[in-house]
Image (cartoon, rainbow, N blue to C red; front, side, top):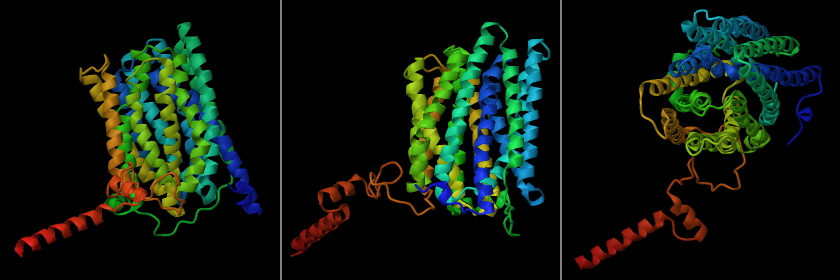
Amino acid sequence: MVKKEEKIEDTKEGQEIKKALSLSIREGASASVMTGTGNSFITPFALSIGANNFQIGFLSSFVGLVGPLTQLYNSRAIEKYSRKKVVMLTVLLQALLWIPIIVLGMAYYFGFFVDYLPWLLILFYSVHIGIGAIAGPVWFSWMGDLVPEKFRGDYFSKRNKIVTTVSVIMMLIAGFFLDFFRTNGSVLIGFSILFSIAMLARIYSVFIFRKQYCPKLELPKDYYFSFREFVARALTNNFGKFVFFMGFFYFAVSIASPFFAVYMLKELEFNYLWFTIITLSSSVFSIIAMTFWGKFSDKYGNRLVLVISSVLISFVPIFWLFSSSKLYIIFVPQLVGGLAWGGFNLAAFNFIYDSVTPPKRALCSIYNNVFVGMGIFVGAMAGGAVARYTSFNLFGSSLIFLFLISAFARLIVSVSFLKFVKEVRVIDKPPMLIRDVRFTGLMENGLHRARDAMMHLETPEKRIKKNFKRVEKIFVKNEE
């Protein structure tokens, strides 16, 4: 792997880019402090102020939809304002929106408007996510102009590893912190302190963005195309097929994903410390695999990583069925999930870079996010409805039934959609794979072809031709 310094020219702009890439890692670490002390604990916070299963599902689903819709509404912001200005303003507003969420915890503590607080949390947290989401595609476009194509996998795997490590450390500290306040009967005060830290960390991101170099973006007149136009042409191009896969896959994932926290906290009755350890264990395993996935995707392409990781992700909910042991959960479902999601997120992120020209990156990222958001919304709403309104229990839990549904849905989507998505980069063929193997390990003409090739036997086509010739000879003899 060629080092970064050898790929960026040693000019004034090259020096600015190197500095910007270093600052981006620092900013990512700052953002992960917000994630580790704030976003990661929003479901436990919702439960602590009286949210039920349906409201938990709605929280996840509505938040998943409002972000992409906000992006869609503001999709042409970069025509009027610089990318740096858009990112700085929206990140600042996102940070300040932790204030009303903190107030909700105080209101519950003093007994004010208790019945309405879960719905107010959904409202304020959705606005928090929606405003922050505006920055996402703009930042994506910004970073695409900074990171050279040939080492995107290497750079983002390094960045993600550092960012995730910080998030894991902060989640672990926050878990100890919450458990201490819970044992003293003042867990809501603990949440308020953590959310305050999250706000300050996000404000620090604004100062980092201010120092970061941002190349000027040149937009051709014909760069823009509407969401309706994108949908109309989606199934006729490779990127459109990828976006459809992402939307349906996140639908399948979100049937169960909001309820793993509910399952651990309510049904298994884990304390906040064990909840935190189990939750962050997945991130730890993701960190371990990040370097491997980065180099693997650079060499063999992002599609293959999507194939492998999506299949592994499909089996994760099934692994939750077999034991409620804390160590089992950490070293089986969380281990597999962490390794798989690390590869999936990296590959999906880089696939967009590879598939889209620079002027259209922000726009195409938004349209991808809209499909993902709709998938999350519909999936989480469906899961919430099943959890609340059905009495079907499996192994003593209605949530286990949701996990099974999600697992089969994930596998069906992976099998059905990824075979139509093609790799867009020139890549090496993995030496461990047979050339004709497709997505699920099946061959174009079945396993017979591989067996026959290895044994130097006739292919199925040749055997069929021989059989027809034999039949013809029999008919000729009978006629004579």
